[in-house]
Image (cartoon, rainbow, N blue to C red; front, top):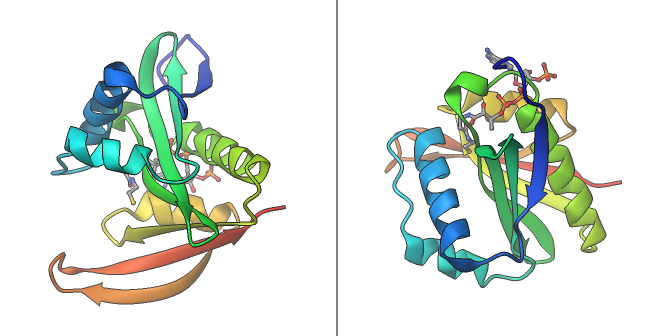
Length: 154
Ligand SMILES: CC(C)(COP(=O)(O)OP(=O)(O)OC[C@H]1O[C@@H](n2cnc3c(N)ncnc32)[C@H](O)[C@@H]1OP(=O)(O)O)[C@@H](O)C(=O)NCCC(=O)NCCS
């Protein structure tokens, strides 16, 4: 990790507003390869049940995020990323742990997420933190297998 400032986690779940949307859009596009996140899509997800958005801050700079919402009685991790230069330093784990405690506080017992082989760190981080692979399906449009992961909280 870059020397100096410690990482703090900010809960922006109920923040809304252009600043939060802009922050999420630019960070998600930096963290995920060839990914464009339309503001309209963020607004649609913000309207979902128990929308949850956490930012990792280094000083005032947003360096990572995790976003999700309730779906069929489970908490779903929609998007997750840490800036490339800061990966492997535990920021993803901090975000994930906070996401679990926030989800439990909202009454959820299960968190699930979807990923692909092209994101091996997400798979490793998830499995290390108690997720089980519950489904794998080839997605021809992505040329990759979709991996469904699920964790019981508590
Ligand atoms: C997935 C991601 C958010 C994890 O964040 P992170 O800050 O790198 O995560 P952490 O530092 O907490 O490390 C997570 C685990 O990754 C693994 N890891 C760390 N460095 C690694 C490396 N160089 N190569 C492979 N795995 C590594 C370790 O198992 C680590 O677990 P540990 O703390 O028990 O050692 C981040 O890597 C990322 O943004 N990746 C690209 C975007 C992405 O994959 N998003 C998910 C799309 S579905």
